[in-house]
Length: 121
Ligand SMILES: [Zn+2]
Image 1: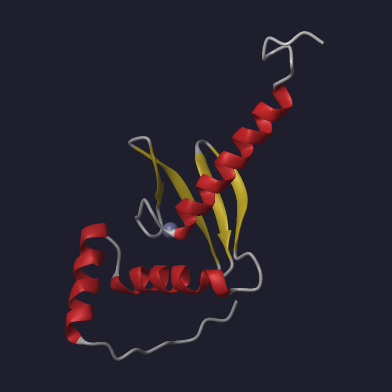
Image 2: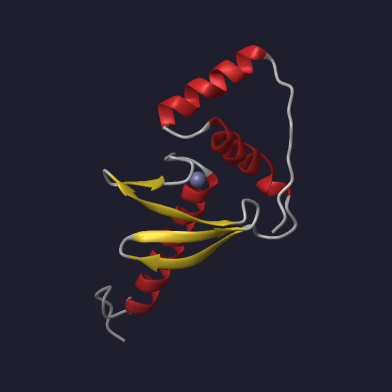
C-alpha cells in the first residue's frame, strides 16, 4: 500500500499533550498520531478495516487496512493490550474484545443443550 506524507500544523499545547501521551505510552509521536487518526476515521470507512488475521500463542493478530500492517493484541495483567498503540482501549483492543465475545458465545451456544440446563426432553 502506498504511503503519503501528511503534514499538520497544530497548536503548541496540542503537540505538548501529544508528546506527553506518546512518552507515557512509550511510542513515537508519529505512531501515536497514526493510531489516533485511524481510530477517529475508522467508523466512516465503508468497509471493515480490521479483521482477525490469526490467533497464535495467546496473541490476536489483526489485519489493519488503514494502517496497512498486522497489529498484535495480547493480554497484560488480565487486560487486552495493543502492542502497536501501547493502549488498553484503542480500536484494535475493542475489535479483539468483540471477537472474543462472539467466539465465546459461539462455543457455548454449540455446547449448551437442554440436558445441560437440567431440562429433560
Ligand atoms: Zn491499537
